[in-house]
Length: 373
Ligand code: AMP
Picture (tube, rainbow, N blue to C red):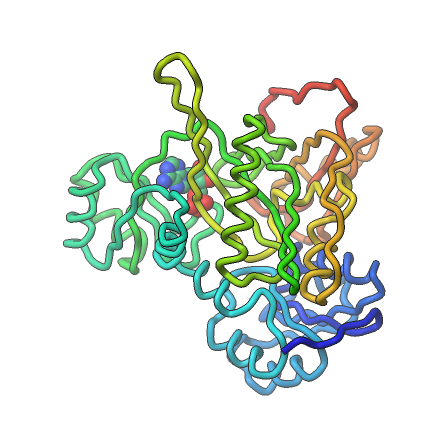
């Protein structure tokens, strides 16, 4: 399916969170309308032209949604495969079902990456306690046990340090199919946000350097402090992944940087941790800090339109406002040059992403090393 899409048409987005909200705002700027479909009411509903609140299994509501839009996309990767297939039979779903199926499951994703020649942490499948014992024998400790599906922001994973903890750890994850990963001795975490068009063109922003607090992204610095050739290798890897997935839209690839200083010279290596088949938190700076935002780029790509330039306006410091951080909105507004984004969520629960700020740094201004929280 290759629909001709024009300004004035309505695009469909599954999911009503802040990513859907920022996609709908970018679509509106290009004269498009957005229909949000989600099982629950989220912040995207404040800014869309149409909304359907129904379950992902409600075929009548899905069929009406498909009939009302020219293309379907999503703001999160856990859309049930049956929902994606139902919609794909009626409308173009971008990124396509292959990207969803590959990235929804950590085991499938890592097998795909390794088959494409892209390095990951060493891993082993774990289906039961005996499998976990065997995996620990082969990978050693410490290592990390992760559920194969539905993990995010550090949820659905347990660090294993001691062989006596195994049964307890497997129970803590609900005895679900899991994978065990060897611990990667990384020095920094980085991500590449890129986009692939329906014509196969690929464009990526500068590599992002990400800091986490309690497993939640707290700050993104751009460009990441890497050697130029390492940054290029990260972007090339992302382009290869997008190509192999026959991808359309924005894709984010999270990577670990490993520095090896044997022999006096520092060598940098990249190991892919995770692929997100969607716009990504570490790309929020692109709204204020680059020619084309990740949200606009995703809209352009899924509509079959030309990609925009990912050129950054300078070096960037993006910070998430988590929970009560957003209560300081008035002080943040007082800081010149700080761009404030609030997602319009009513309740600031601890750990909840309430907004973010972006600052384009002055030419020679260093990144501050202060802890974020
Ligand atoms: P994930 O949910 O896979 O993105 O993991 C959340 C965080 O846990 C990552 O951002 C890392 O800080 C850490 N982590 C995950 N996997 C590994 C690994 N194999 N080795 C070291 N740290 C890891």
